[in-house]
Length: 245
Image (cartoon, rainbow, N blue to C red; front, top):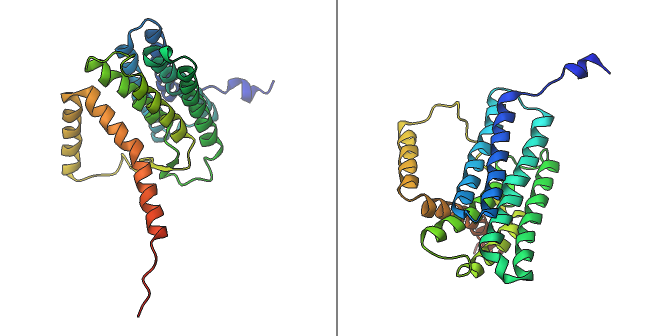
């Protein structure tokens, strides 16, 4: 064996964060199986935080690697593909028979296809936008619905049709060609006006005032934003150009 290959290791910090995201996704699955759905929903949001950190930390510390990219995708499939599908199925869709597990599978397959397409299109897409809704946002949409309805006192059986429609919507939107803002053009090392810091503080205060409702509203708005922008662009293309007299 080539001694250079034998010595090659992995970068600990970004992969540690990826492992934390994977653990949170696995924890969500375990809690869903134990019928503790609020904990499962919160765990998916925690997985989102770690998933958002690992890539940025890798870029800022220049510790990107092919191993890290593959590991991140596998972690995403567990945390944002399998975990949300199982949570929503166990909470609301189980009693719907074939339609219930079909909706959960549509979501899970959509997440897998979304991740596969993302990995193969890295070099050919505009980095400022995602093609289709990203799987963490789709997972947050599902987890947010479970969390906010549980907090409002709804049972899974009472909310099953809302859950079914939203699950299918999230799965289909992940594999659509609708563009979503990625936020990757934000430079964290660049100085910003003081008002931006104040806005971030206000944002944290808003989320902390009622986490289930605010988080669900934010990600529902993000999910719909792609359709709104796509509809506006379609309207502008269809609008006839006024002829000069």
